[in-house]
Amino acid sequence: MFQIEILPRAEADAEEGYQWYRKHDVRVAIDFLMEVDASAQRTCQDPALGPMIDREHRFYRLKRFPYYLVYRIEAPRS
Image 1 (cartoon, rainbow, N blue to C red):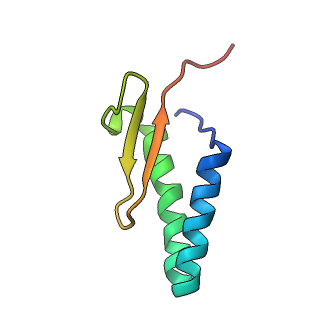
Image 2 (image 1 turned 180 degrees about the vertical axis):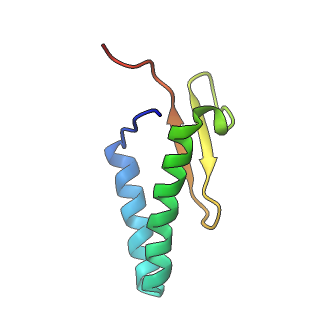
């Protein structure tokens, strides 16, 4: 399985989404975070899962929320 590195801007976007959902329904906010985590795990297990955006990047749409994970696959560092 691949490792994941979450960029600060992506982390801020997820936090912003969580806070928005939390204002409306705490359970939905928790579901949102769980879906972000599950989607990240899916892409780690099968990196080719998401379609290509450009030569480097892919995206994976969260199933229940209007968010996408944008990612790229890098060779492991020695």
